Length: 114
Image (tube, rainbow, N blue to C red; front, side, top):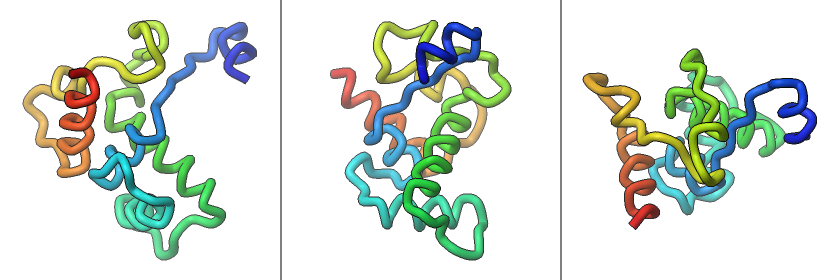
């Protein structure tokens, strides 16, 4: 799928499971139920997305958007050497207020780089 997208010039973005969990819940070790609850809360849904994979897909989209991917035109795979990240949120969103989940993600990413 990745090769097919790349061959057609479609940008491909990568986020690790712990990165997505940290962005959405504040903990990179969150379980599926916690991710589902937070996705429901963040998006203001009446019920948790079913199946759990749907909540995971939405969590991935939320993480990517919070990292500056939506509307930014940044292809993280083209600007990084590994699949594990891009520029920290703080560099992309200077002057904007971060949510607690975004701050937790930023701190987790900083710890992972050490």
